[in-house]
Figure 1 (cartoon, rainbow, N blue to C red):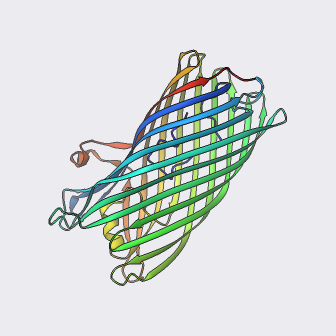
Figure 2: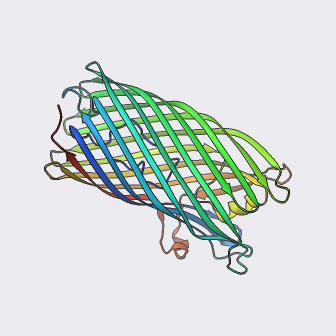
Figure 3: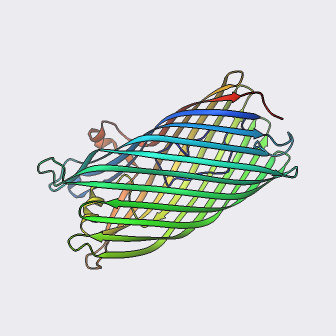
Length: 390
C-alpha cells in the first residue's frame, strides 16, 4: 500500500518501483479509501490573504501477485510481481481572498474528478536480479465558477482546469544478502490547461532522467533511500484578451526528489515512517489556482513556478485475521513556492508571488481551519485471494 494514487498532489514524487510494505506471497487484493487536500496561500497588499485548495476523496482498488526472493537475498522486494491499481475520486476546488479587497477574485464550489491508475511488472532474471517496469497516471479535471470584482457575487466566468502526469520507468534490481540496489530510466509526460473567458494556456512537457533505489534489511528493520532527477522542456500556447493572439512559449521543466523510509516489522504489525523532499520547476500554474494568478492570467501574464516540498509520512499495517490486513496511511506536506508572472507582451514588469502550501492561523476564518498542511488520510484492507503460490 502507498499514497501515490490517493493524494491531491499530482506533481509530488512517485516511487514507481518500490514495493512499499513487503507483500505476502501469492495474490492479494486491496481496497483503500482516502481524504486528501492541498492548500496554496499568498499574502496580498493591504494585509489580505489569497488561499486556494483542492480536496479529492478517493476509492482505490487493486490486485497484486508476488513471489518473494530467496529468503537471504534482498530486502523485501519480490523477485516476481505484477500489480494493477485504479483510484477514482471526486474533487472540490475553492479559492477566497480574506479580508475581501476591492476588486478581489473569488471562486467557489468548483467540481472535478481525479482518475489515477498504476501498473507494475517485475520479472526475475537469474537468482539475484529482476527486470522491472512500471507506469503511473495521475490527473485531475475541474470546472470552477469565478467571481471577478466581488461586486454582485454572481458568476463572472468559468475556469476549466486540466492537470495530468504520466510516468514510465524501466529498471534493473540486483540483490545481495539483506541488500538490494535498483537503477531505472524514467520518463514523465505532463500536461496542463487553464481556460477562462479572458485567457487560455495549454502546456505539455516531456522530461527524462533516472532514479536510484537502495534497500537494506537487518532483523526487523528495513531502510530505503530513493532519489530521482528528471529534466526537459514544456511547450505551450497562450491566448489573451482582447485580441486573443497566439503566444508560444518553451521553457525548462524539472522534477527532482529524494526520499527515505524506515520500516519496523513484526509478525503482526508493520510500522513505517518516511520523509520526501521535492523540488519542481514548471512554466505553468493549473492546480489550486489563486485569485492573484487568475487576475494576472486574464491580464496577459504567464507563470513560472518553482516549488520545494517537504513530506512526512506514517503508515501502519496490522494483521487482523488469517489472510486479512488493515492499514492506516498518513501524509503531511509543507512547502514554499515562488511564482514569477511575466507579461507575455514584454511591456509590464514581472510580478512575484511567494506561495506557501499551508493555511496560516490568522486566516482561520477562510475555510474554518487553522495551520493545515497538505495532507492525506487513508484507510485500507488487503485480502489474500486463494492459497499462496510457490
